[in-house]
Length: 223
Figure 1: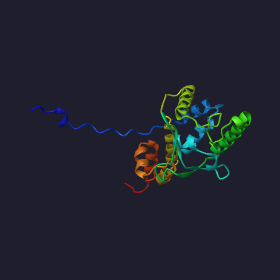
Figure 2: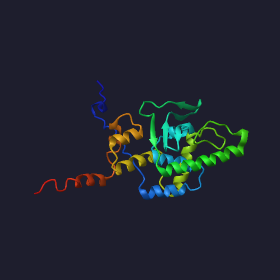
Figure 3: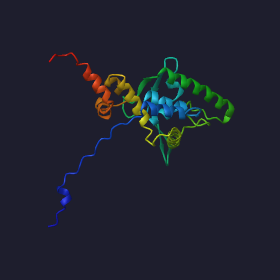
Figure 4: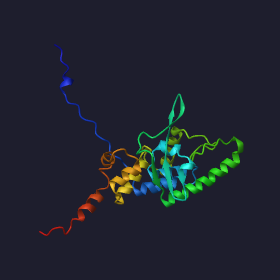
């Protein structure tokens, strides 16, 4: 009888990858590299809201309230090779959410809207109005792959290592937790369906937070 010895071995479980984020210095380098770029506001929004790529590229002006400084996440945009652009509703109710905008992000969006109006005026009837916050110069949806390429170009310009675009989302969550924001609130802002996802993904965040938490026990008892 032939026996496959590999069947007797217990394969190691896949390790869950920890979320990584830029340091404050690296984030500033990235911001400087974006200066003057047509899509600067898009990356600023990612840093200041934690949106997923598909949520950002599907964002429409009717879902942006610059007065109240909020954006409503309603749908997402993906790219399917054979079918072209694929618009889809978020997978769960948690994905559909309202995210507050930091003041500087709202200001950047106002500037972007003004520049977009200039592009529309310049192109005239050739502009394809889709109400997209972030679109090509012709008004059409941005190919997610092209958006990724733009990101890689900015990383190189900033002198940073090539890392997945998702890192901008991690930066947002990391900074919230470092600021002491409740995990449940972070879950809601990130659009995670389960709080365990948020906890597991960011369990490694900032050793300083652990020291800060334990320091609050100082004076709890005397030896």
